[in-house]
Image 1 (cartoon, rainbow, N blue to C red):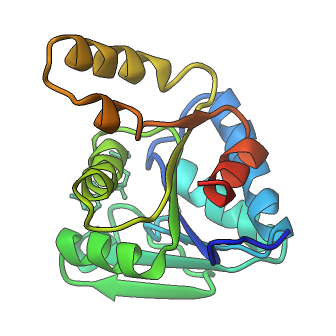
Image 2: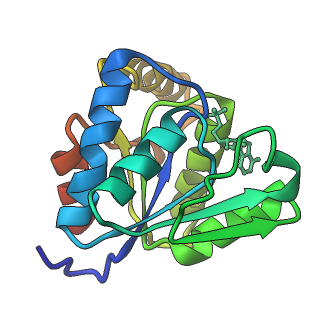
Length: 184
Ligand code: AMP
């Protein structure tokens, strides 16, 4: 499949924790789906948790995986040593900036503070018009609807504008998530 809007590099934000068996299965499926579409994975460079599972799935399928990790996390998050490229940077800010520069689009799989922080930075940038790179939340086993319920609460209380709420989009399969990047 060719991507009309020039999507070649997809940054995936996801957990450095192991997650549920359903998370692992879905993330294992996302790897070959990226490769089948000739998309390069950009991610945080760790070999830990779901991050490592995804990078291994991409590499096992013969694809390209590029990691960006701060020096301070090389040990703690176990930098992946078999990636197509591993960029070791000085700070978390540089990590996010480099992932943003390399990426044409973002997929957000289940994760914790790091994943949510990274994803919301991109959503905010989109909302404020700093970029036009699509962001899609890959919902696995009912992970994101709880956050959507909170966003609906923020909408109802007037804290969130409808245009901003509409930017939070989910897809419930790997192929639907990648399709959504194309039809953005
Ligand atoms: P988590 O979802 O908390 O497991 O984190 C997923 C990834 O996000 C980990 O590699 C964290 O190191 C990373 N992360 C957390 N906070 C930031 C940040 N401010 N900038 C860049 N990466 C971050």
